[in-house]
Length: 442
Image (tube, rainbow, N blue to C red; front, side):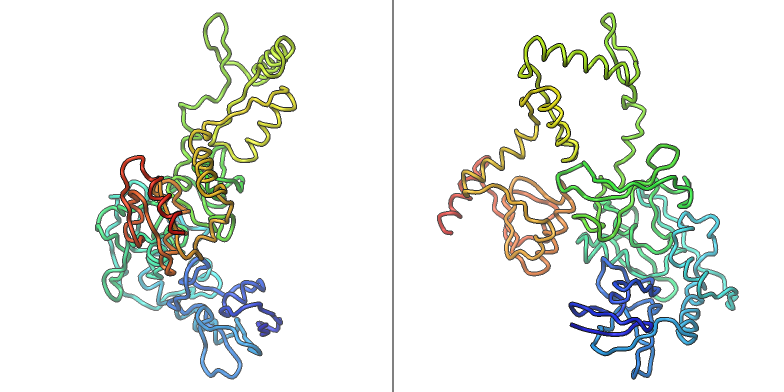
């Protein structure tokens, strides 16, 4: 146990963490622009400096580990002066276009300048000019706003494992640039967008649409694109989804999203979707209202059950629905319709794999937490590319590889080409032979 004091508040820690993380656990906010809970300590922006008793100089709280008996102060005139000076340097080249910038209202730099200053800049030099890129259809980047915190680069390389972007140039000419020098040409997970503290990287689906304070409501929900079940937050305005954002630390994905979960929401508002029920009248489908449609469905189900019994009714559930939706559906079929005839097309896919492993290994696919993959010693992959089919699951596999796990790919998985220890190419539909050979050795 580690006990320290931050701002006269005694804090007890179960395990060693940085002072910044200890303060977060205690609800004490220390400003920072380069540190992020999803990234490793970096110590670049120096805004998180704190005073520690018996240490002559200010210390960066994101890199200094908490020790027993430490007495830390996060706010003082000396600390505020340092932070004000750092912010003044950042504003030398940062454009003052807050009324126009789409990040206004949720910009971390804007919040810190409002709190610490400076109110007036002393530098008279012209701000740097970087042509705005319009070559990417999903991500918009404005490098005049970039403060070179490297959050995006570290997220892309250390967490996502794509390493699609880098910092180029030196001094005040430093900026983030994709390796292709044109479009990002990456996996378009958008996780770089999540960690950018300013308006340097933005979603083209979001820009010039609304301000953060104009959101009517935010709803926490589950992505239904794949079986991982990532948690995300949907921002709603005028009864339509305007943006999907992550919530760091929430759900199985811990704030990480893929391109489908983050950007694939426009189908909900597609004009091609049926928004009203259609009822067949005189051989033609005509628009109706929900009350009439439900009455017709209920009447036909009741009549069928009365004439032929509940077993004459069958229900097919969609694998796109959430577990809660499918649970409610099977409850409706059994209780309201009196039928156990319930099926899903996933039976021919996922359930078939479950049955195969039950026969082969004596147990089915386990319900281990996805996050537990990171601590695996070895991972065997067959039947697809998890980085494409279940991208957030693929992140855990890449992380396990970086931690020293052996990743064996049976078949082709393009997204794991740099993260595999061994690749096995079996004959078509002969994967079972490799598995049986492995069982013999085990």
